[in-house]
Image (cartoon, rainbow, N blue to C red; front, side, top):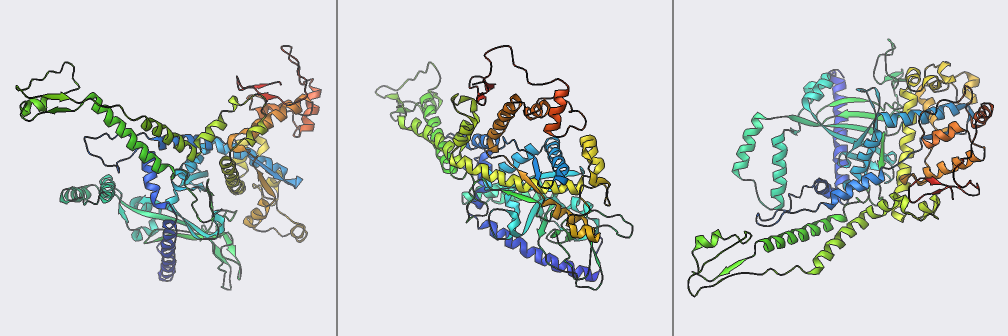
Length: 626
C-alpha cells in the first residue's frame, strides 16, 4: 500500500476508527467469558510454573505437576485421528475432482506436518476452551498452511451462535510483531506504524514480577524500578499488535463505472486470482472484506482473498455450551485439585524432612547457643553434652495419618476422571478388550464425553476440509498437481476455456445455453456445493478405520475386492499402480483375473470358514480368524 492521498487518508481514518471500536467490542466480549481470566494461570501450571504459590524458604516447594501430564495425555489421545480425506459428489462428471481432492489433502496433511499443527489447536483447548485452525495461503512457502491461534487473540465480532466462526459478523486475529518487521513488509505505511509496547526480555520479566507481586499485594519498590528503567534504555524492542480482520460487508458499487477490487493491475494482466471487477450496483465484497491494521495504521483494506468466501478460521470447542463462546476448558475443574495436591505433597515433604532432622528440645542454658546451632540431627554419630542438671532430647516424629496418602490418590484419580484422561487411555488400549468384543462394541463402549468430543471434532473437520478443497481449486494449478500426483493430477477441465484450473466452464444449463462463463470465484463457490466431505463415525479413536479394514478383507476373500484397493487400504507400501485404465474396482477385478491373481488360502493353521468377520487378537493386537 502506497502512502495515501488526502481523500484516501480520510477514508482509512474512518476504517481505522471502526476497526478500533471492533477491537474494544471483541476484547470486552472475550473478557466476559467465564474462565477467560484463568487462561494464563492454567498455561503457567501446564508448563510447571507455580511461582504464584509463594512459600517460605524453609518449607518445601515440591510440585506434582499432574496438569502437565494430563495435558500431554489428552493431546496425544485426541489427536490420534485417522481422518478419511474423502470427498464425494453425486455428479459423476466431477468424480475426478473429488478423488484429486482426497489425494491432495492426504499429501498436504503429511508434507506440511499438519498433524502436529492440529495438535497445537487441541493444546489451546485445554486452558482456553477453544482452539482455532487458521487456514491461510502462506506466500513464504507458496502453499496452504495451518496456524493454531491463541483463543485470547481471536475476537469474534457480534457472534450469533457458539458453534462456528461463520455465524459471526466478523472474526479478528491479533499477533504481536516488531515495528521494524511491519515497516519492512508495508513500506508505504512505515511512517504510520507506531509501537504499542516494549517486547524486550527485561520488559517481559518486569511484567511477570509485577503480576506475582500484585497477587501478594506488594509493590516492586525503587530497586527494581531503577534496574528496569536502566535496562529499558539499552534493551528496547518496539513491538505492536497486528490485527487481521475478516468481516461481512454488504457495500455496493454506487458509482456509474466498474471498480477494480483487490491487488494488481488489470491493464497489464498481472494480478492475483482473488482480484476482480465490480460492475455498478453489484456488491463490492461478495466473499467478504479483509482489513489488516495496527492501532495507528491501516495496512490492507480489500476483499477476502479466498474463493470459498468463509472466514478462514475453524473453531474447535471440545466441551461446548450454548451460553459460552469459548466453551468449558477441560482443565479448569482440575485447578483446585492440583493446588490441593501440591499442598499435600509439600506437607509430606516437610514431614519427611522432620524425620531426617527431628527437633531438638533443650532446657535453657543447658548448652551454649553456638553448640545448639551446630547440632545437625541428620548426621550419624551425633553427640551432645549438657550442663549438670540440664537435659536435652530429640523429639520423635509421629507417622503421617493414613488418610493423607488416600487423599493424594483420590486427587490424582479425580483429576483423571474430570479431564477424561482415564476414559481416553482405556479406549486406546484396544488390545485389552475381551476377544468376543467387535469393533462396533468398542465404539459403543465409549463414554458420553468421548462420544461428544468425537462428534465435535468431526464437525470441525468437515468445515476445515471444505475450506481446504476450495483452496486446492484456487491455488493448486495444473503444473503443481502434476508435480504432486503425476498424470493423474490432470482433469478434462484443465483444457477447457479457462485452462489450468479444476473449475468447469459451465455449472448449469442456462450458462451453457447462453455461453456465459461467470467469474472464477462465483463458479468456485457453486462448484464447492457439489461436494461433501465424509468423516467416518468414531474416527476420533481410529476404531472405524479398523472396521473398514476388516470389511475390505471380507470383501477380498469373497472375490469382490481387488488386491490393489485392499493393500492400499491396509497401508501396505510398494503396492504399485494397477494396470492402465483400471480405475474402478470392477475394472481392477477384471485385470486381476487376466493376470491370474487372486486370494490364496494359507497352508498353515486352521482354514478360514468365512462365516464371520475377523476379530481383534488381544494378545498380539493383530487380526486373526475367529
